[in-house]
Image (cartoon, rainbow, N blue to C red; front, side, top):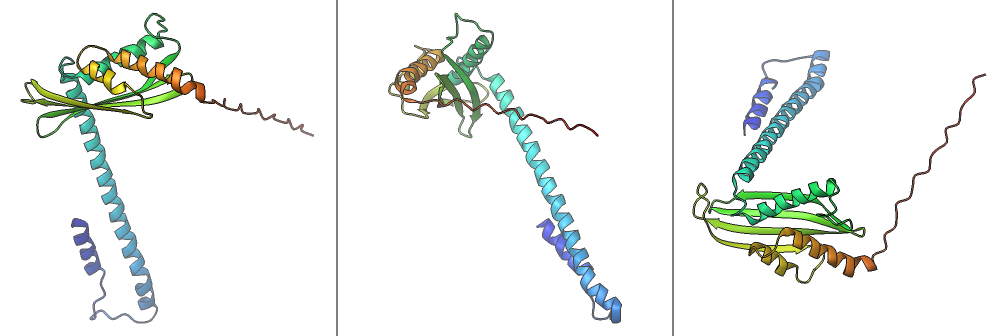
Length: 226
């Protein structure tokens, strides 16, 4: 709306009044150059408006990231199962990076872990956890989402919870083992091992992995100066 008013003011400012009569070459120049100047000015206003919108979006994005970090740090892992799972996966990845053979198997690895929490207006905490299990050159993406209802955002006392899980390919028994994680009978490491075993037994034997071609080195011909 503001931009529209600006356009209207500019149009009125550059309008040719009947009382101001121009003749000859001056009229010719005025007639063809003025619209171009007006158009350039309007384009400059549009650029400024889009730059301002971009800055506003950046600020909102940074504010959301900061708010999410504060929320993540304030959540108690005992009340938020997926936060505890995310913490365990980070710890597992660090152990893998340190080549601790007694914690992480050489046959599989995990990566691309993403954890996102967020509250709704109904005092419901929504958590999402996604990670990729890689084994024998085959990878499967696992996504887990949960909803936990709290009596109050400031005093996190959970009243009820629900979850759902899906993956790139159907894995029989995956939902049951994830359910046992929410019940406290298993850990997220058991889920990773379960998916890894499925890849090794039911996927890898039927997948042909073609190695990447090595780039040929281009020989540089030396040019002798005469």
